[in-house]
Image: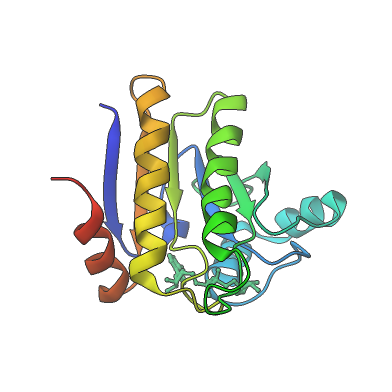
Length: 168
Ligand code: APR
């Protein structure tokens, strides 16, 4: 089945081909989902990230998953919300597009996203989820049969925003 699923809970528990990390430009860990993923993956993840040398906002990098049930981690750096004055919408859309490119390039068929930029980076959930759903629906039109995208919600706000935008 090709499509979208909503998962309520901790992304580090998902056994998928790739989970997406809402990282920062250094790729050297942090709080939020970044901290949770590094804690669950173990020190090997940080070692691999140190070798990558950072990631510009809007781009994505792939690593192994180490102690995670997921095979890979795709690290992407979302924009910090600046009241829509710094091209945030395009940068956030670019995060999703670049994660999908890495999924295709690595011939992976399942991916789980947290709500990129909707925590520390302050992106309004409703607008961010609209972008996430739009970019995902565009990707799934060209994706291989059997590709599944999971949206992982860690709170009611994100879940409500996602359900509002997902076509029934
Ligand atoms: N599983 C799933 N989702 C989670 C988890 C988890 N274990 N922990 C947090 N979240 C959710 C948050 O509730 C939020 O909806 O992930 C979303 C993204 O929030 P952040 O992790 O704060 O990420 P972001 O807003 O993109 O800020 C990135 O925070 O942790 C630092 O190093 C990171 O500097 C970077 C910044």
